[in-house]
Length: 164
Image 1 (cartoon, rainbow, N blue to C red):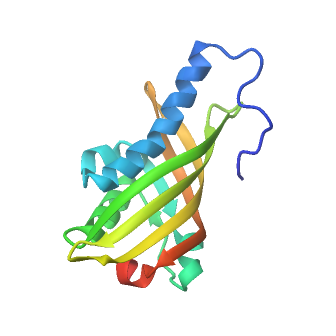
Image 2 (cartoon, rainbow, N blue to C red):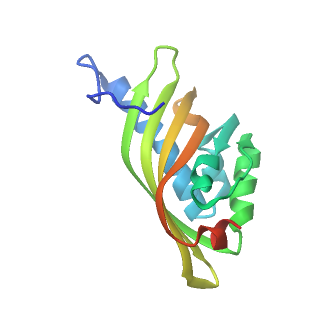
């Protein structure tokens, strides 16, 4: 469920709450930049070991039906392996909304604009504006994504050329 609270923090927010919010949002930044830099360590640092990622809602916009991904290692291998030597990406994260839940988990809703270009011919591209619904858990002093659902708001270009 998306974070739609009418305020960012409760009136009693302290430095720890601000730290948590920054770390929660940083998990999504690590996800995007890890893809853009083709850095498996950075990309893996965004996810819990038992993470799940569901790109099906986004892919349905152009008629694709990819399977959900389970496990940090599978997510990293699938994303980087699918683009390796073939696709260049840039991701921009905006409008992050955070809610730390009483059970110690967190929800993050954000917009992510993801540009995908064929490495051999940048004229072939797909620009996606996606809405992320993310559940996060603590991993020491940082937060990691445990469940990510990506939905597409709009796209331009040819996603089938990028994603197959």
